[in-house]
Image 1 (cartoon, rainbow, N blue to C red):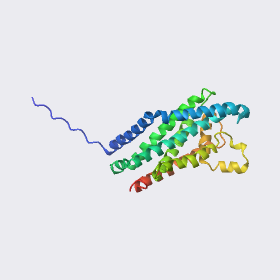
Image 2: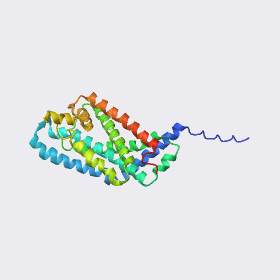
Image 3: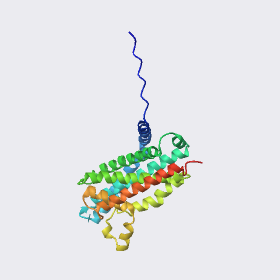
Image 4: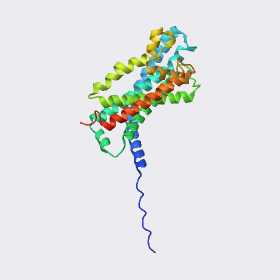
Length: 269
């Protein structure tokens, strides 16, 4: 009796190849985060613990209530969102610039994978780091105050959108950066001031009219308040305005990032 001929493996479709490539980039980014967890996860946990002790405990006891909540409760959403923003931005800016500096980003550019896969892989890795750090900070907050989540869907979608926005912004920073100092300039001179002035530690209603107008020009203000609405049920701005702004930023930054990849700006010498 003759043995049946082996059936040849069906060729992998373009869609399947793209998903494999996307998963590979994401796994590499996750492995990088976990391999150096002492640099990626521990420092923000220590920093936020100090914020809770100093601002929430010592200074907050002198301030009293804010917006109907204890000062400790009030700053929890802002500190969580601040950690998510900073770590999402820092992860992709350092990782992608490192790949560019090491010249192995060129291997991705000449491969058959489309640009959206390259961008999606790096952004997904940065978002995951932001979510991990945010979860750690929220867990730490539970040791200092009671944390309720009256709007869990708002909480989750806000942190995802905010993390995505600053992951894309970090990607753009890494594309244009020519040396490691260029990666640190934006977080130091732009991102940190905008974060501190974005309503993390205070309600905008405490400010004079001209300062309120300046604060409302700060996009981080809307992200912090949308997240505060998800955790506390209160916000200085209507949540749908925050969502419209965040979705607009995601669309614009995604389009710009894909255009930069397609043109090879800062990537091809």
